[in-house]
Length: 172
Ligand SMILES: [Fe+2]
Ligand SMILES: [Fe+2]
Image 1 (cartoon, protein in one colour):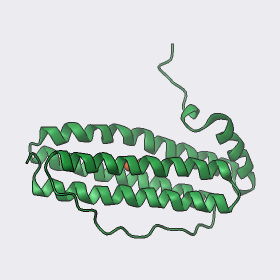
Image 2 (cartoon, rainbow, N blue to C red):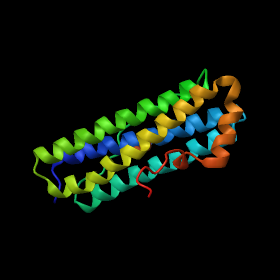
Image 3 (cartoon, protein in one colour):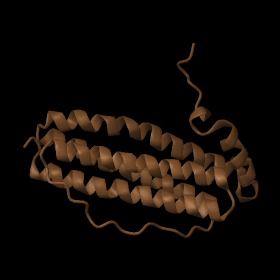
């Protein structure tokens, strides 16, 4: 067994959180779907799928390293939102929370001198850079457009998607 009981428990907790985030993004997608904003709904549906793949990446690691995978109880996500801004702010807060949790997992792996886990978790460390940046960009676009201008946000997402909204500053 390559993984400690302690780290297994912490990774299982993270698996629960990634599944929770997947459900939270699904709930946000449903909110936007109900509001007849399909591009925003699509964005959060894709995010929900991505979170599920994060959970599965962690599941594979726990199993491959010989730990016992147990999915913890998962609370139900928030489904009611007053505004698009509120929903997008929740997504950003959630990405900031995930980043804190990933950092905590790396701290634990370092404490345990588990180099394999440290190496594995670096993927998540890097992933959070993009996740937080994307969530911040979307929140700012929604704030700039205002509730009355959400069709502009739809148009923006349909034309550019969010990935293209950050210029590549390294491009020559
Ligand atoms: Fe994630
Ligand atoms: Fe995420």
